[in-house]
Every structure is written in C-alpha cells, then in structure tokens.
Length: 191
Ligand SMILES: [Zn+2]
Image 1 (tube, rainbow, N blue to C red):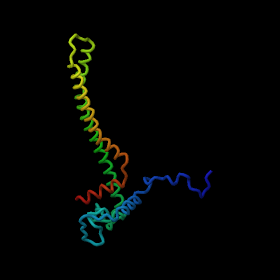
Image 2 (cartoon, rainbow, N blue to C red):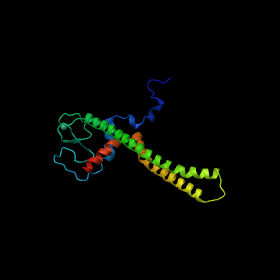
Image 3 (cartoon, helix red, strand yellow):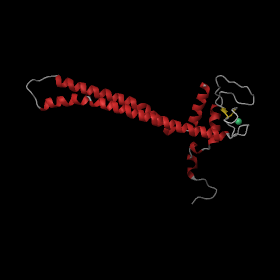
Image 4 (cartoon, rainbow, N blue to C red):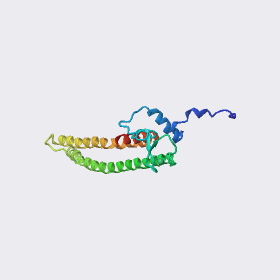
C-alpha cells in the first residue's frame, strides 16, 4: 500500500512527451533563445524579431507575436493556432510518407519484374546440366554469371529505393512538437 504523501515509484520515468504543449514550447525557446535570426526586421519594438525562431504570425491581426504568449495582443488564442498548425503539419507528413511509400511500391514492382529476367539465365544452364551432352562448354557458366549479375543489380537497386522510405518511417515514429517547431523556424528563416 502507498501512503497518501508518497509519490508513485515510477514518477521519475515520466517522459517529456507528457509535458503540456506550452511547457514544451517554452523549453524549446529556452534552448534556442540565443540562436540569432539572419536578418531581423523589427518595425515595432514591442513585437518580436521577424523572421525568427521566437516569432509567430497571428492569423487574426497578421502581426508578429511572441511564440511564448498564449494570446496575441489582439485577443486571438495563439496557442490554439499553434496547435492547429501542428496538427496540419502532422497530417502533411503522414500524407507525404504515404505518397513516398506508394511511389516506392510501384518502383519496386518494376525492379522485381526486371529481376525475373535473370531467372532464365540461371534456369537454362540447369537444363544443360540435367541432360549433359558430350560437348562440355563454358557457355552455361557465362549464362549463370549474367543471371546472377542481373539479380544482384536488382537487389542493390531495391535496397537503395527502400532507404528513403525507411528514413521517413523512422521520422514518423520519432517526431515531437520540437521537431515541428524546428522545421517551422527553418522555414521562417528561409522565407
Ligand atoms: Zn493578433
């Protein structure tokens, strides 16, 4: 039995994923606060530098506002806007992954068909050896070599094609709100 004042023993293993969105935004900004933006344009000194990692355009008044603020000075709920953007981004990366996986499926099909072309080169010499004739020839071995080469090239191509989808799968499995904030900040600096 656990006494009233005692914390559960697993309290220390709580993952940062369980932190609230605001806390995670705050922590992200704390960690990146010193990263200077390339070309800060600050027209209103009470507004954040734009473009910048700390800046966020209010969808209501279109002014730049600090990312740490829950509400814009016009009263718009910025945290909700950020959550919407995060959800949209989640949908977009899932969609991109799906597209990538579907394109890969088509390419793999072609590679596998091509790979089948290597089979006769291996199968025909087997017939030669199954019904041996008097004339010993190196030709069947050459055929086998060609067959193996075709299938080998296809296997290498298949591995290369699989790589980006594997990376994308890994990204989908590991992204967090920080990933979204980072990508968002990069986009802002590029604009
Ligand atoms: Zn506003």
